[in-house]
Image (cartoon, rainbow, N blue to C red; front, side, top):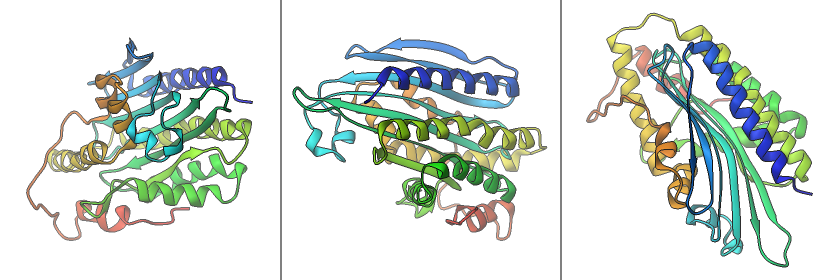
Length: 299
């Protein structure tokens, strides 16, 4: 039996606990911005800008509903077209100022559709992925190990599947390159019963702080210069390209009449594009592509 209220309560508590942890690291409080959606539902955006550690970041909760599935959702479930739907979740993106501290994304979400005289159809989705500008093997291994530990209790096959799914999803096809070092990603997940699927999604959400905070605390105070900052801005351009061209969550939010300010919170504040630029051979910038963006088995 589905328990939509229990899912919502968990997502709200997850948002609060993640924000509290990040405020401990940064020292600045997140702005809280509650909003309502005219078509139904609303959310709470928790945003930080120009902090001591985070140049920009947000940890957003939303619970929205409607009468017809948006195209980005109906594409994978055409048999559900025309149903009433509800979607809720927590989505975060953090852009630290220091180029040695990686950008990170995490999302956990729940979707349910309703039709008169029929059982509701539900599924969970989520995951997290790490986008470094300067790679550290120990960071990538720690992040992937924490992701693996979160999902492995629910099935030995899940981590290999979700890791591969993440590698394939966060890939810029037009560039033929990965966005970062990956992590885990899953969608349309209901192959376990509701209680087990929900428990797995909670495990993913609860794993975020242990996966990311130790990396952030090691890297955010490292000394950097204009060269590192410049390369960070260049690589952030890839983040923008992916989110606008490929990301299903961005597309769903915009197509469903979501709040644009909250949806585009994921965009980095300072970005650069260059024409046909390549890094110096054997430089730290070149090694990001050769040693880290190539798909690897980190654990």
